[in-house]
Length: 148
Length: 130
Image 1 (cartoon, rainbow over the protein chains, first blue to last red):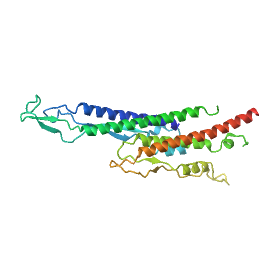
Image 2 (image 1 turned 180 degrees about the vertical axis):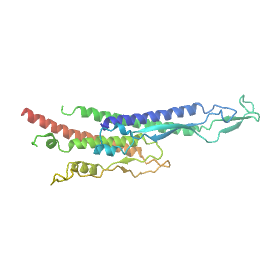
Image 3 (image 1 turned 180 degrees about the horizontal axis):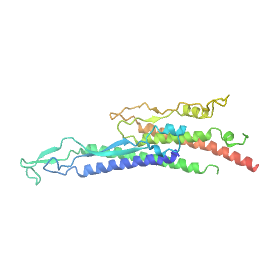
């Protein structure tokens, strides 16, 4: 039944967007987390979105209509969370407790403006998936009244 | 087949509903992938699919026992959408457009449902003799 599959697809979308919101929150929270070595400094984390391919064993027979739907994915998945390789910010703060021998402190490569736009974008996408789910629910509820 | 058989009296409405539900899935997948890099939005030509669906019941003529029985194979492929605003990450989903297609599809699902429901009501009336 393809309408119930819409729930799964919208669910994967909501899940992916909430993970994206989580990474954004983590990035913003750690935007000022300083360190004195490159390895220990927090780096901006970004989710890596990929199409969730359809599982072939979920097919109930090789029907003509199912063949067509087999060409589309089954929603979205997070293939991984990658750390940004943008250069870290080096600030000269000799009185900072984390300053190195030369007086520099390393700040994360988090771009707060970028994170804020990312946050708004993921929030909108989340809402969109909720709307999709809502409409699918109405369609299914309507179908249940068939013949009444 | 009698005039009151399901196949004759329901007409094309059940197939229309199924196609509408399948299209809802395709469009929902587009919307879920609106932030996936390099994702290409898909959709199908509803009219062509419905034509294919109604022609699908045609079977080949068999004049000998040794003939293979087969049905007409119809073209049914998902197409790629032409983006109105191409984006730099290769994603071709216009979420506003997709959302409007999805809503329109849901409304048309409801109208097809209305027709199908009417046919069931007619059948019920015929059974009760009203």
